[in-house]
Amino acid sequence: MSTLLNGLAASSGIAIAPAYLLVGPDLSVNQQYSANENHEVKRLHDSFTLTLNEVQTIRQHAHKSLGKRAAAVVDDQLAILDDRSLHAEILKKVNRDHLSAEWAIKKTADEQLKILEKMNDNDYLSSRATAIKDVTKRVLSHLMGVELPDPTLLDHRAIFVAQNITPTDTAQFDRRFVAGLVTDDGGRTSHFTIMSKTLSLPAVVGTEKATKIIKNGDLLIVDGIHGKVIVDPSEEEVDHYQRLAAQFDREQQEWGTLKDEQTVSTDGRHFKVVANVGTPIDVLDARQNGAEGIGLVRSEFLYASGDRLPSEKEQTQAYKQFLTEMPGQRVVVRTLDIGGDKNLGMLKLPQENNPFLGFRAIRIGLAKPEILRPQLRALLRASVYGRLAIMFPMIATVEEFWQARKILDEERQRLLNEGVQVTDNIEVGMMLEIPSSAVMADAFAREVDFFSIGSNDLIQYLFAADRGNPRVAYLYQELHPAVLRLVKKVIDAAHAEGKWVSMCGEMASNPLATPLLMAMGLDEFSMNSSSILHIRSLINQLNTRQLQPLVHKALNATTAAEVERLVRQAVPKVIE
Figure (cartoon, rainbow, N blue to C red):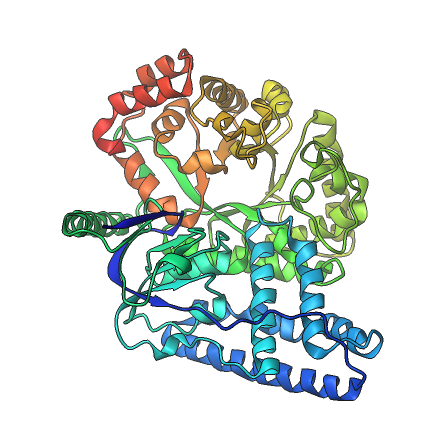
């Protein structure tokens, strides 16, 4: 009898193959002390040297076998191994506190992870935490004299099952033999997602108990579309999923033909489908998936490591990379958006009872111009390398936008006075994610060049329901008429002033919302790269004029369930 495990779909596709358990040795560390500091320091030095050589070898293998992007996923590990501040902290614990090498490594890693633990909504910060765990595991294995699992030893096609699959694991994969990935842990870091998608590997994460239930050699079905794993499937289940896999492959081939096409409805209305990115490497994924620009650069990645703020020069180089990688395409950079569930070690933010409604995003930038001004100067310096747009997050009042725009204008003039070239056609807009801003959209539309609707926060604030709280998750309803009416109000207000509107939240990639957003006049859909071709295919099959009656009914509906029924009835073939 088969067993079903539910998880999160990290990379689409379907795989049917035997299981290969990638389970490592016990590396747990107890509190240990040593009176021989010199011996412990030497052990640390030797283990770090071995780990560095090991990771460099993995990187070389990945570059040769899998390409540049695969090699880059272990760069975080190399950066941590070269982080002098981390080394100093570990040595201090050995020399001053007389900790053993193992206990000093473990304690320092735990301290670093504690700083990052509330940052799991940001891909880059989450991937740094993964890198710290990976390096810690490898250093401890050398200190303890135990071997870690080696994915290169696999010599047959199989599905990897592990508690967590690290970037250095994926960089060692042989694409001939790895059919799919299943993990216990639920973190979908950028590295793991990028690698599984790059290798076209179906992946399901967050099953919680896969390594406890699955044995080596068990036949598995990995459904990376719906986030399901079937252990010891029946013949009927195998037949069913073989048909689904064939259908999925056909869809992928059809969508692939749209990579270099424009996004145009059947009645000739042009839309843009663009990408949300968190790091420069994500731009490669965006281009491969046919992005028509970058609708959201999450600039937080620049602030994620180290104990200091990034310099103006460092930021300029990063923004230049985004712009040069997307020649001729608009790149929208959001200024630093921290607070809420995203905090940075080098910025000591106050403890708040309700941080989601507290000191965050542009509120921090305006209160701490020493953070905002260098970022804006870096963006202005980089503007000559492409088509830049700047977006301020979490704007609640027109006065806030005026203040932010004034700082931008001041820094522009300072650079010009210094003889620095700055593009004069930079678009300046705002994330529209607070209900008060949506209500006042007509006033904001006279001030901004564009809106980008942050549907995730807009919906949670509209329903006064934390989207990360499972007890009230049922209130996060993208298709609710209240959401649709607010979105329609924003689009109409912007268009009345000749301004364009994007959406960069999860709603933008929801196929059930696509017909409604098209008909309401949304100009740009911004999403994770993996959804771009699907949404483009959907838009290319729909007629905006014929969808107007659907929008009218949806806006006058009472519940989200009623709206979903209306959409499915209006465009059943496309939605399927």
